[in-house]
Length: 153
Image (tube, rainbow, N blue to C red; front, side, top):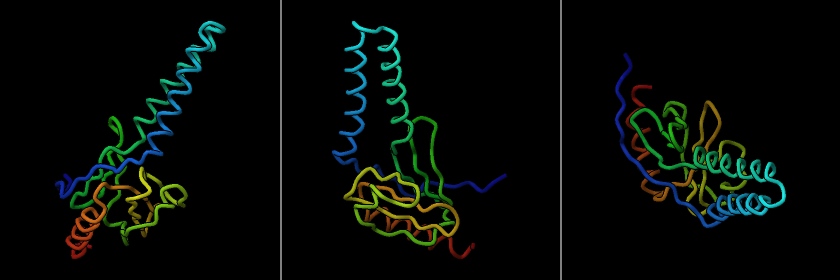
C-alpha cells in the first residue's frame, strides 16, 4: 500500500480576459451559426450545435480549476474527473516566467493568464507553465515542499 499524501497548498487559476473572449467567442459563434442555420438546413444546424456542445465540454475538461501542492506532487485539477499530476521528484526548478510563455511555450501550457505565469522545469518529462492567482505564495509553498522532500531523494 502506498504512502498517504496530504494537501499542502491550493490556489485557483488567474483567468485573463483574452481567455474568456476566446472560449466565449468560440461558443457564441458556433451557437449563433447553428441557430441561423435552423431555417436553412436542419441537419447542418444540428451538426453545428453538436460542435458547440462538444467545444463546451472540451473547454470544461481542459481549463484548469485549481493548482494543488501535495507533499509528493503538484496536481493541476481540470474539469470533471481529469487532473494532471507532476511528481515533485521530477521537478528541478519552479520560477516566475514572462507573460509570453502563456502563449508560446515548448512544453505543456496550462497557463490561463499572461500576468501570473509560473514555469515548472522538470528533469524528467515535459516542462509546464501555469497561472496561479497568487504566484509568489504558490512558488514559496512549492519551494518548501521540494525542500521537505529532498532528504528522501
